[in-house]
Image 1 (cartoon, rainbow, N blue to C red):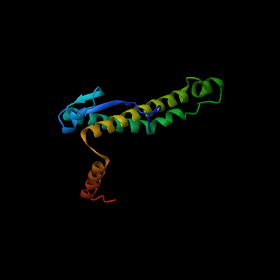
Image 2: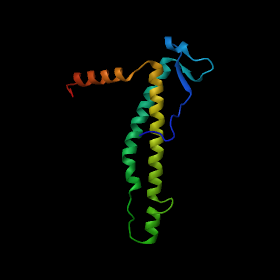
Image 3: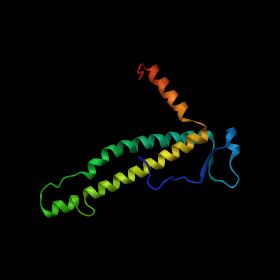
Image 4: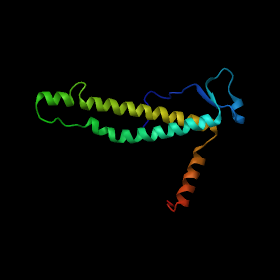
Length: 136
């Protein structure tokens, strides 16, 4: 799932003010500057929210696949018509997809500002799986 329309934070930087790389902010650059502890707290909230939205998205498809309770004009219009149940469900799915994309980009930018890389994350996940006896 990605947000439609490209990068939401295009041209906006994120800086951890209390890390060595925090001082390398480009001159005149726009963005967000905060301490690494604030940034880690925001990262955790964003990851938790993205997980919740991912769960909601997987179940939201039911809201766009409703069948009318009866095969008659009023029921068909209420479910399949303009502003009907299925159209509203598809709008909700799109909204969740947009939020998921926004949070994915935010998480990536926060991780980059904190110096957290995918390789480190993958190694940590592998170590956790091995320690729990879930070697894949």
